[in-house]
Amino acid sequence: MILCDTNILIEIYRDNATIIQSIKLLGQENLAVPDVTCAELFFGARNKIELQAISKDLESLQVLPVNTFISSLAVKLVKDYSLSHKLTLPDSIIGATAIYHGLKLYTLNVKDFKFIEGLELFSL
Image 1: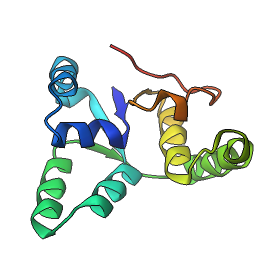
Image 2 (image 1 turned 180 degrees about the horizontal axis):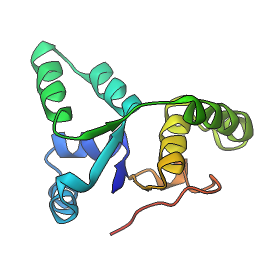
Image 3 (image 1 turned 45 degrees about the vertical axis):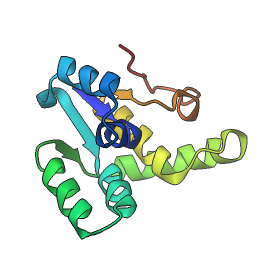
């Protein structure tokens, strides 16, 4: 199983052929998203039609909720890396989710995550 960062799903909506092909190779059944990614996608919806389409698409993916461990680790990551690396709260939750579940993170923003100890990034 691979954890997808929000930007991977955004690129699918933008019809990025490279990302779409990589997702096909991985198999949709092998993908998961953190619930904060759902929130980011909903926040970025431009209208109710997009919001409904995103909601329907997310139903076909495994969504991993925040738990106590993920929350605590995300807080620690923000404390450790927000000043030095500008780690954002959503990215800390995404990274913590990947670490907790032992999943590689598929992201286009490697620079936002490469410094996090214990986080393995996915590359094709």
